[in-house]
Length: 137
Image (tube, rainbow, N blue to C red):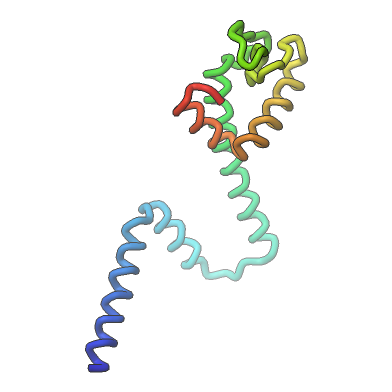
């Protein structure tokens, strides 16, 4: 009886490992194998450099979402102005925020758009997903 239980546990573990392996992309598997196969021990500097690279990848993805969002909203035009009022206010500027004056300098519009988006959606990619579903953010 113990042998059957041990064999069924072993088979269950193999099934779980196989499922996890199938859900990862080929690129992820290649990256993991490359990291594991690396013969040298990582230093603190190596770890920091790797983390920095990952943060830049994340930043690139976030900027891509910001770019798509603001192309749809204003095509990056700081003078853009929406004549349709929402809650008694018009949307203006690059990020098309309610009550934002399109006469503000573009860097101030961008700063306010970043603050608003991160406050409301946590990330630009979340805001972009919301925009795709509702056609507003």
